[in-house]
Length: 374
Ligand SMILES: NC(=O)c1ccc[n+]([C@@H]2O[C@H](COP(=O)([O-])OP(=O)(O)OC[C@H]3O[C@@H](n4cnc5c(N)ncnc54)[C@H](O)[C@@H]3O)[C@@H](O)[C@H]2O)c1
Picture 1 (cartoon, rainbow, N blue to C red):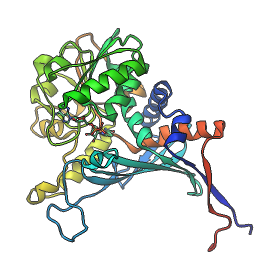
Picture 2 (picture 1 turned 135 degrees about the horizontal axis):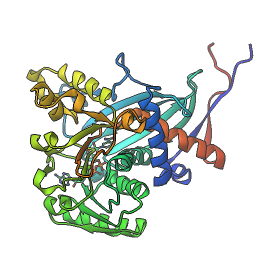
Picture 3 (picture 1 turned 90 degrees about the vertical axis):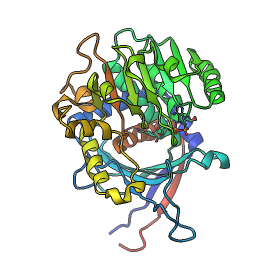
Picture 4 (picture 1 turned 45 degrees about the horizontal axis):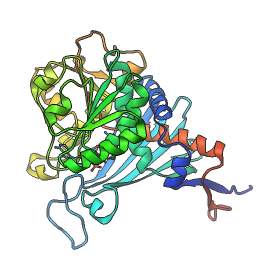
């Protein structure tokens, strides 16, 4: 038996940029295709329920050992795994650590890598620097939502939180909404919003205006994306929103029950959010400090209270696959709850891997010349 050499492609952040990771139009098209494949059911995520968002290391509240980390806001390690079918036919894992103190050390809050694997042999195909990959795939989801849900002629978008996810979101929204003319940005830290406005206006060639309050940000906007991190959840009042607006939550926010009840709620993939609910419910209330919460918890509470029906909920994957309606009337308002799925990392990672192969980008690394033990 000839022992097989295994090589894989290593793509550092600069390689990922050369491979097109910041290309909003290709990213939105790829993630739209992914939602269609997921809507057909041709995917598997982790766990027996096939729909786990990821497996997380849950840190204890009190220090148990000198070096063991403790729980804190946005403090986690997470492994997110998926098989994605259709044209992608690939397995992927995203593995990351997140610490809100990182920017003080000159690092992004989260540090991420993605591995792609051959679905037959399990060999690695690529190891990729994934901060930009992950930010762009995250930003593309509201943009795919905008394609199916935003009012015709939508021209105004708002971003809450001037971080990397908002930056990627606006890049992708510009690709998905051809009429987009104005964007507003609001951040608790005014200087961050101003710097964001200046940089992104230049980069995208649209007017991006920093505003001083949440109300100003949200009012009159066709599409609003919330992507903040940290303890203070953004609070949004229903009366500030246009009746035909789309509000996309990529992080957590305090939205009132009446906003959910007066809007159509769209999840990225509903099955994953049910699995999330089950996982969170396994942590007893006596250990509440270790619960991180999950994005759909208020909607599921309304369902448990009988105020909403499960059948009222929609999924972006089902909409993209033509199994559920997108916007069905001019005055319909949407709240999108976006948890983020490992299939997105698989899709965008696979597309960038193809780009890198075509362009000869990256460094070939050897796993083994010949497996030592067979
Ligand atoms: N759904 C997904 O797939 C997905 C993927 C990645 C990240 N996220 C989430 O997106 C969020 C943003 O991530 P990021 O990497 O851009 O974070 P970041 O730390 O780079 O930026 C967050 C920004 O939000 C601002 N902020 C915090 N609280 C605020 C408030 N109440 N009002 C206005 N601004 C506020 C901060 O000042 C900061 O500038 C996080 O919650 C993260 O968990 C979601």
